Image 1 (cartoon, helix red, strand yellow):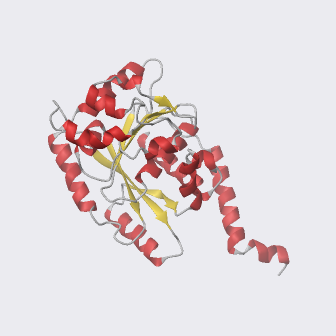
Image 2 (cartoon, one colour):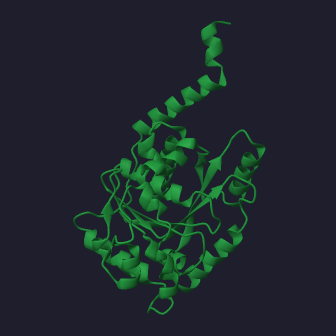
Image 3 (cartoon, one colour):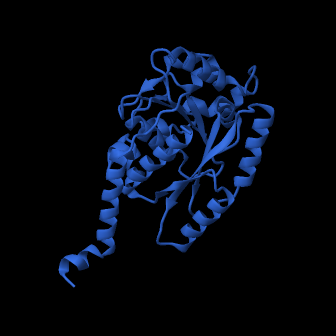
Length: 297
């Protein structure tokens, strides 16, 4: 056996060849645009599953492919705003002003430096008190929906949006309820780790309650497996179990556990622009393409 042949058969060589093949496939793929704006709430009551990471990177991947994308940061921590490189200091006009003070969304939207066509409604620390303030407001569950509908109607002629992603806090309070009422689709990230499905049945029950009483258009359209490590039996078992329970909703694309994905937000970037050829970036681009193709059916 020649040295060249032995090298080609090593795990590293196979991984490099696979990454090259995926890059070529993505470069050649035409990502379809939806005919109507798709509004997706990214939610999971369990913390640390990659909600914000998924929101930011799917939005960036779709914007990279030519879509106009709006991210609404509804988490008081403001991590999505940080990752998209937009200003969100306490004095910055934000989603809090939209929901509580009825400021038009167009007055708080910022363009992300990531990609042309990628915008963000930032979150500031003021959002931490919004749960309490919402209690006494009229139509408290509909505040975000009304503001978003007006904004999309204003933007429709000149700059229509193809996608809206809403990043939720890891709890079912009035902010998350506002996100569910504003959306038509729910995207649930599930990490490939122990207790991955813990709390999922409760989340699905809550979504059904929202659908029944507040938003009949709402449905779980997408489940994305995150933090996948192919070397562990546990991760493979989780993938198999989730796909068995949700064969239609679960994407074929799986997001690997990746240092690059974790590093990117500290530079105010998504992994899509931070390291475009990394396995994490390719995986999110593949997931975004799959979401786009599903929506174009």
